[in-house]
Image (cartoon, rainbow, N blue to C red):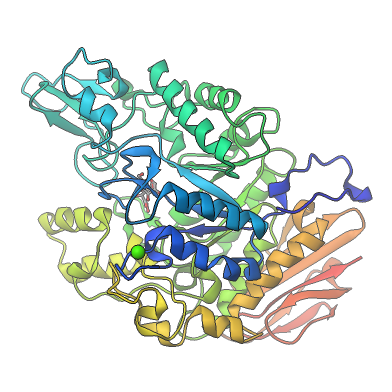
Length: 556
Ligand code: ISL
Ligand code: CA
């Protein structure tokens, strides 16, 4: 985490350390296995901290490492204050914190408090009897008159969101798997327990929290409302007051339902809620209205630019954007938005450039920085993700062929992001000396971190430069965003301006060379900050761009 330096041209900006930071997400199960059991672990992460320091990131967002039956790979927590044995121990975690801090890196934990595991002692108690003190920690409802679920709320993993408990004769709510019962946030005792737990981690010295599906905690089930419930923002303000409010930490909410005006409620500077939220509009704009991500729409650059531009303007003066292409739930950025076959290196760099030079805090998902790609699994047995496996069963019942389902899953399924991190050309990409819990992508022989580190012109070094530039140039952090050529089908062009500085970003998303007519006002000379072909230092009104060429030049 870097020190903040006052800059005369932007003195009135309310600066936060995380404005200048680059965050790196680790999915621990798939990152680095230190003991050969095929599962990534905390000691494995510690061994790779030097790599992350070289990359130049400031914060690690660690997907859940807590005690868990692993029904949803740790997003089903049975003890918030202990580490899953396959990931390590609390002592390992404290060592991770200390070793990361030595390298200037903070650790942000994944706060999964919309639900727990059904193995959490609260739920074990809650289902013992209706008058158990923990019963009201969860959301219970009577069956309908014919024994059916209370309403037709659906689980995000398929099927009803209600599970019948025969012992109590009641249904409980689970918006995710039946092993992830939803907590009852209307109960003040639940909130108090969660705040206590959060403070326990904050006192240990963590850098913040990523908050899992936090837009759901205000749910009003009897009205069929899950996201954006009436008390959502009251709960977040209370959480802020009771936990991290007085500390300089990074908090980011996962909010699939957010829109530009609610983003200001979450992240407005005087709201006392979160630092920023993840919005997913660039992701969902390619989902089918009926079949969602299992049937996706083709890439549409003008539509993508419109979404980014809208969010850049919405949070230009208040609130803060988070910038990401991928995470552990999403397909690989290069496969989704770039050209993994024709121009893997050039297009991966272009994706990085256009994302990291917008206003907001950029997030790198593990492996993105070396150009990792989607899987090409052939059989359903190769998948491990509960969502994919559940959806396969449901789609089979609905008559979809296995081949069609697998095509959709290879394009958009969550396991694309969960294959082992590719460290080297060694077996399984050097992820493990044993057998990995999920198959490695066979392209590890050429796409791996060792190769990236060794080659100064690699995708890895491009990401490293972007993280470094963010530290050097206020215009990248705070400059005003302006999109140009919004309807152009193949190029993404924008400027950032701050004080007397203008940063011009030009990126081709075409696999063919193209000639580009730029508006006269963009004709400029300047210092080339980053590029993926030869540096450009002068821009006239006509530009020749190579396939997936991109650059940024700074005029001072
Ligand atoms: O991935 C999804 C859509 O592509 C959703 O199915 C996903 O569950 C949703 O994004 C919420 O995600 C978060 O909460 C889930 C967990 O499975 C995800 O890994 C997590 O990121 C439940 O805790
Ligand atoms: Ca291990």
